[in-house]
Image (cartoon, rainbow, N blue to C red; front, side, top):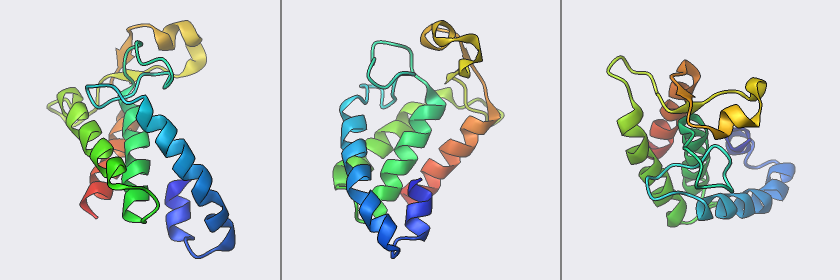
Length: 133
């Protein structure tokens, strides 16, 4: 959503969405863990991380910062996420630590089983690009 908002930033409907985005970003940052990542279920930080979800959240925070919608705390949060993702980057460029899709139910997602998933790398790429803008 935030990538579309960035492109359509002068559209009146986008301006209506910004306060909701700011509120959601503030809420999400409260649940960021010490390792810079978010748990598979954001409100349950005691669960194992989800690197894909973390990369997506952080990319949105970085974009929001660069658009002037979010404070510097969002940029710092995104940078902390990038640092937290680096140990999960495999030598061949994939991102490990990704929670399974919900096809196996919430027990599978909330458990400790994680996978390498190529789509997660795309989210990490968006984060890197958003921080370099």
